[in-house]
Image 1 (cartoon, rainbow, N blue to C red):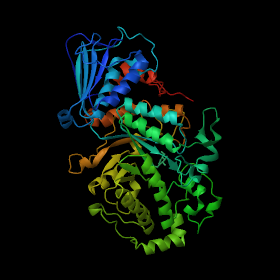
Image 2: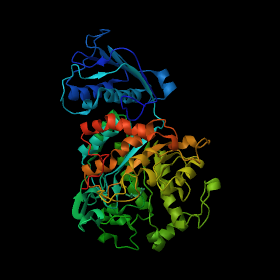
Image 3: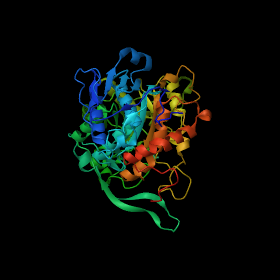
Image 4: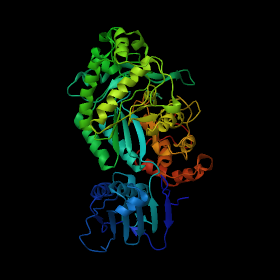
Length: 554
Ligand code: TNX
């Protein structure tokens, strides 16, 4: 048990003897090369919360008010991994040593947690002198997984830029390091593409759509209303989001969903659809939930169009991984379309044969599934030629995975297991465990009583490495885990907060800390730390989490 209520729990926490470190107006901040961005973040954060300036120590070994020292150390990085850090606190000095700049940043997040909940506010409500301190201690810490992700669906409901920046701060506070931005879907296209302006010109706005849960409350009142909706990010907005994330050592992975979940794109450019079987000119941005049948046509022209889109995407997002969706692509239009069938013949796609590259996990695929993997293969190669890697939902396994492609395993863990055994990297995000759009209690008063019931404890007991892979030579293919926040029923920040928290704190601990396997995992200890300090931190950050005592029935 960690007495200071750190979340996620660090690997090692050793209290030391001696007086605490006290933060005050006289405290200096020294940053060695590699730690400058964390120094800037600490000055801004503690400057606002505590009103301290944290000037450089200017060579004085022990300034009167003590010093915070930030530095990197290569050998430490080799021992703990680049994101590891050691934090040592004594009367006149707190030292954060990271294995890399990212490690220093994570250590600084721990430092802020140690200072108390008031350190999470954006203006000073208590004077620093005397009340801001860190007990003498040593923390040694490093993440279990390299991919600790959160998906935010800004397609179903747009989140304005400021909200996304705030989410990045919340991810950083939980030592999460990937923001998967779901930018396009049937119900909206949110990223400005200069060469194809109708994508947002048309695709970013939808007509009145039912919002909320489809049922009725106890009094019989419908739990939905109908609203028009819209929003888009300019390329500069996204550059700012990427830069803000990078300062917090978070990678933004963009998702452009192909070839399904694409009706907003088809509404903007009807030639992208299966024009020989649907009057795509009459299509609008979809105003229903679920999976639209209006998918992309498997043509060279569509590939060229999306290459153009991706050229702009790559320019904005430096992420090694680019997510190209691939989930839930209904094949009816391709089955009916003479053009799609011709493509199947021309490309020599297997009719009902085993998928290539699957070894003992070979599955039979239909020609239309093979056609879907024709998309994935094309873009995997296209991305690889530009030094990037494709990641897609586990449906892209169906026709055999292109080399180097990674998989987000969402339909349970079997896709992740099959992909890892075939030598592909995977991110585990099974809907049964970490879908934050699903309800967090069985009670009728949950504001959106949708999906599986996933309590805080259920999320805490999620184990990212499937038992089929644990201890095998495929285990290292599990890059990490991701919690997914889909927003069909989360139309504003308050709802996203409610669904996301406190469960994201449990998820962060699962992804960062080395916890015992689920049966021995100590949920009571996690709950104690939540009660002791972390709910107060969330309060200080203005997070509208689901309170432990029960729902907000609104
Ligand atoms: C499935 S997860 C989807 C999403 C929905 C979600 C709702 C995935 C790849 N596809 O499009 O928003 O379920 O829980």
